[in-house]
Amino acid sequence: MIHNRPTNGDRTYDVVVIGGGPSGLMAAISAQSSQARTLLIEKGSKLGRKLAISGGGRCNVTNAKPLDELIRNIPGNGRFLHSALAQFNNYDIIRFFENLGIALKEEDRGRVFPRSDKASTVVSALVDYVRNLGVDIRLNSPVNNLVAPNQEIQGIALTSGEVITARAVIVATGGANVPATGSTGDAYPWARALGHRIVPPYPTEVPLTSDDAIILQHRLQGLSWHNATVQLTAGTKPLATESGDLLFSHFGLTGPVALRLSHYVSTALRNNPATIFTAFIDLGGTDSQEDLAKRFHEARLSQARRQIQTLLHQTWPQRLTEVLLDIAQISGATPVSQLSNAQIQTLARLIKKFPLSISGTLPLNKATVTGGGVSVKDIHPRTMASKRCQGLYFAGEVIDVHAHTGGYNITVAFSTGHAAGLHAALFARQVSGTDA
Ligand SMILES: Cc1cc2nc3c(=O)[nH]c(=O)nc-3n(C[C@H](O)[C@H](O)[C@H](O)COP(=O)(O)OP(=O)(O)OC[C@H]3O[C@@H](n4cnc5c(N)ncnc54)[C@H](O)[C@@H]3O)c2cc1C
Image (cartoon, rainbow, N blue to C red; front, side, top):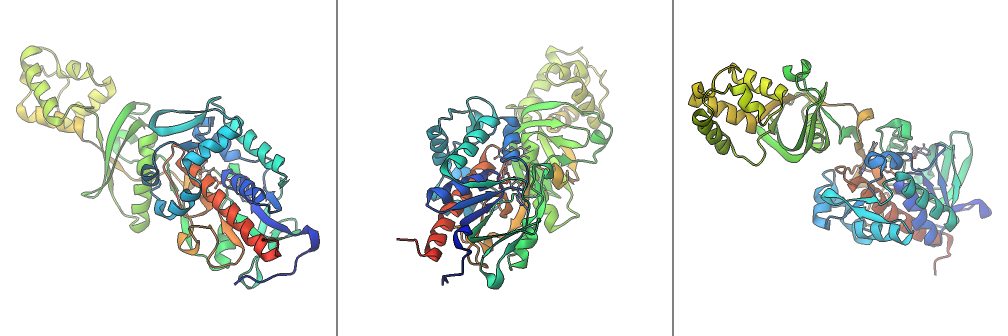
């Protein structure tokens, strides 16, 4: 039931959007385009700060994969997004930017970037569009709380003490990772106070940590592996298998494949903080374990006098060769002819399933994406409206939704921002009686 509420004369906004990231910018565009007088309020001095550093500073605006694959790449509550994506999806995002005159290009794995390779192209186009539509913008204006007596939105309160009245408010404050960009989890207590469940924030799309001796001794630090396939297990239970580039660092594993696996590590640790993980890294490429064993058997004849370390180094980097031989307990100087069948099997197995113990992930402030947030159970999936407070909407990473990198999170931000803006505007017009 919608009540007419007292307004503050002309000064009441139809829609106030809190947060000038991609979700807030799109929400403001969508609300103002739906004839709602809209204010976009941002605590920092710039709009789109996280967007500007996304995709390695090139801004991975969306991903061109079909819907089912898009949802598969949103491991954190992707199914919640079906309805929002039905209203504004990745292809709509591509059309949106092309209509703004931003030329886009598709790269590997469906990732879509501006042809300029500059995030600033995307951020400027969005900000200019917001301004040209006539959205009021206030920077350097941190919001302190929502004003919602009796679970009905009346506006927002700034930390300065100023209160701005509004018929609808969209919370688009982002997650709690990389706080220097402004996303510091401010909205969680506001939402909790109004009865929303908050899934405690946790790091995701984040490097993996390891206390394996190989990592602690920096034996593979700096080694990168192109398109590795990594299977993650918890105890003996397989959790996930992902492929992509991998980098051994001084603390563990990083690179796209490690980031993708971090969702499973964080999720398992939330259920059981004592979980013990192993990453089995396939260093054998397209060769199976049998292929590798066959190659070593053949080498026993064709390269009989060659040392095993020299043979392995023909394919694998020197440091990796040394580690493989240490784990297999084979002296590098052993002539290939003297390798036993059991040693050949051990080496072939190690190369296909190189085990590395994983202890967890880097903390939230180092994560690319925040897991957790306002529970999807308390948000209507079609409108992004709160189920707890009338006139309140959510968009973007503040919601308990997270995706793999590759343009999927930004797609979530734009899609939920679009739905929230549209439906908040419709709500505000109904409340003010301006709806036809
Ligand atoms: C280094 C990095 C690389 C990334 N690369 C990719 C990528 O390649 N692909 C991908 O899909 N995603 C990527 N992401 C994730 C993506 O950038 C985010 O998911 C996206 O920016 C979330 O948008 P948002 O609008 O919900 O939140 P944000 O972009 O975080 O914006 C939230 C805004 O709200 C403002 N705000 C917060 N609290 C208040 C308050 N109290 N008052 C007023 N304003 C407030 C903040 O200052 C901020 O401007 C990357 C993230 C990082 C950090």
